[in-house]
Amino acid sequence: MPVLEAGAHVLRPLTADAFRPFGQVLVADATYTVNLGHADRTDLLASLAHRETAPQLCLSHFDVRPMALPATITELEAHPYTAQVFLPITESRPVVVVALAGPDGRPDPETLAAFLGAPGQAILYDAGVWHAGLTTASDPGHFLMAMWRGSRPDTLVEPLSRPLVVDLAG
Ligand SMILES: NC(=O)N[C@@H](O)C(=O)O
Ligand code: NI
Image 1 (cartoon, rainbow, N blue to C red):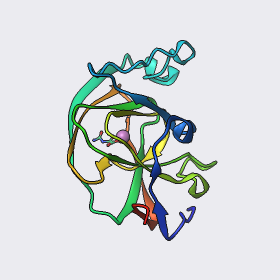
Image 2 (tube, helix red, strand yellow):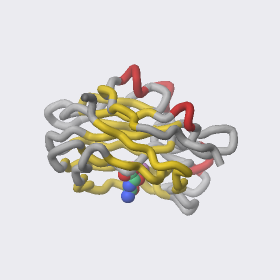
Image 3 (cartoon, rainbow, N blue to C red):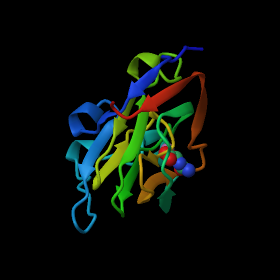
Image 4 (cartoon, rainbow, N blue to C red):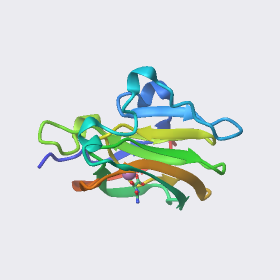
């Protein structure tokens, strides 16, 4: 079981470039239309494996609660067959904690990253990317969540062998 990094991870500003290994950060415009039209990402919200089970597109409203900082993250989750996107409906500062899967499929501690988002940013986790449940840094936030749901289990949860502490920059 990989031992995840101890000590606090300072929340870095969430930018498209910094988040690229984990997915996408998009600015939702006034109509909250997020341009997901990436021609080379035709399976943006569904991997080939999922297509065999005729997945349905799940849309749900997320009432995201703030998390007092510093905060301790004890587990991450991943959706092996589908990307997951969170579109902001209200202004808030999402706290995003992610890691890539290691050779054993579990979160790779070397890839752990913690970000503080800005109001208006939409977050898309690529399929299989480990992430903490979405929270916000101060005010509660409302998001529209989209992901594919099929007949296969769509959420894996991996407890962290060592809690991860995240905090705002000093
Ligand atoms: N409940 C639920 O779907 N939550 C997670 O997938 C998440 O990423 O917050
Ligand atoms: Ni998720």
